[in-house]
Amino acid sequence: MGLPNKKNWRPKLLLIVLSISAALLLAEGALRIILLAPFSHSSFAKKMRNPDLYAFGREDYWKLFIIWKHGNIPTENGIHPLLGWSQAPYSAANPYGLKQEALEALSSAKPKVFFYGDSFVDGSTKASYTLPQLLSGCLKNSVAVDLGVGGFGFDQTYLLFHETHSLVPKSHLIVGILLDDLDRTLDTVRHYQKPYFRIESGVLSLKGAPVERNPQRYLASLEPKVFSYLYARVAYLSGIDEVRWTSPERAYQDQVKGITGRIIANIKKEAGTTPLVFVIFHQWFSLKENDWRETYLKEEFTKQGLAFLNTKPVLLQAAQEMSVPVTQFYNTQNDGHHNTLGNEVVAKALCTYLGAAPFVR
Image 1 (cartoon, rainbow, N blue to C red):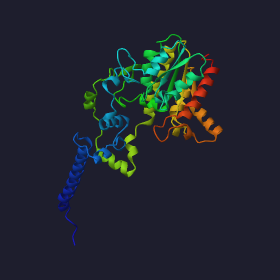
Image 2 (spheres, rainbow, N blue to C red):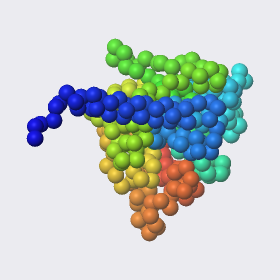
Image 3 (cartoon, helix red, strand yellow):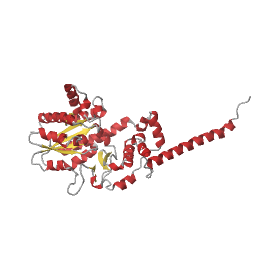
């Protein structure tokens, strides 16, 4: 018996390859129709529209999040032309989009403590148990102004700081930083378009501002760079989806550190002689991890001669003294922020730290 004629296999092999390719293209097309077609409103389509399953990195995740869950897009009044978004509606009468509690604190006759940051400052507890409110309660003759805005990156925190820190002469300044806020400095989009910095000629250069204030126009401009939704879905199901998020770790860290370090230096310079302290916040799952972001922040603050309070040892010590797991300080079933107990522990430590600093009298 002779060997098979190789030439007879070539058309069959080509047919197999073409059939598989056509099937994959059809599957990709069908999936894109389900996920992206504006007329696809079935419950099945809504269930499939999970950014975690398809995003190739942080930017794609947030673009898909906005496209598929655009009910979360702020209204035009909630969009801030410089900051991206704000605590409350932006207007000529309220140019920084501050909520009523912050405006009332600003108008107080007492000396002010400006407290900047993201939602770990802004709070997810009742208004009377946010960190600024608890801090106001333990300070003798001062009032804390809540300048935390949910979802902010450290870059947006700095922009709000830059615009407002000198509003009240001789105010004291606290800047809160959640570890994830460092990563957000590289993002160009989150819940909505956001401003961001890039380093040009060794200095920070602001990009993405002014922010598009027409939500529908911005929504129409979003173009996720997902080359294959089918591949992303298969990768997720097969357990190898981490390849979609892989980036050169050293280069990524260097970029984050470069921007963060310059922002910290700018805050220090702009604060001048005004008392300034940074507060490092942690999500509950990072309290028992060694995170490069925490290590970097501690080293950077020390190098620049800046005061800071790291809430990680504070919460770990409190958990040990109370004989409770650290999750008792967090709203783990909802949004992952500090609960009332967590805010009380941090506020007490911050008051003690400030009093010992000497910072507020």
